[in-house]
Length: 132
Image (cartoon, rainbow, N blue to C red; front, top):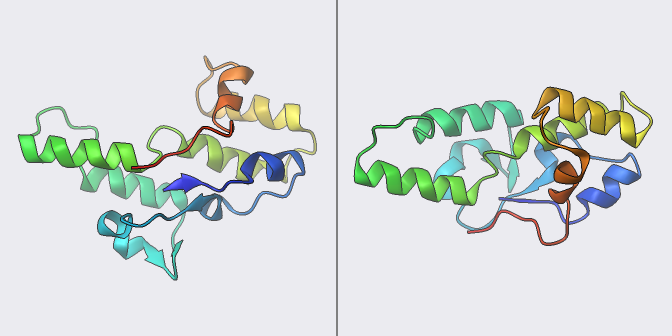
């Protein structure tokens, strides 16, 4: 799963799609999230999907056997486990705030307050993507 290629452009133009449409399903993703994909797109709320992924693949558990650890690592590498909240907040709150700076401040307060604006923006750099 990766971020849509024109996310930064749409963010600046205040034209982001719903959070679920900010991600592109890649070949192989269906192996992990088949029940949440319809016609090549996420068919549920992004938060529901990632809560399910965390539980289903035991991503927050510490005592996993070798196979579970391997599977959890594959899921972490394939899906934006740590970044999806930032994308969701930008998408959800873009309509609420007319100005870009206000949206950045809202994202910081709702996700990782320690993260500065530069760090947040690295998520949208051309080289950033979540690929297998």
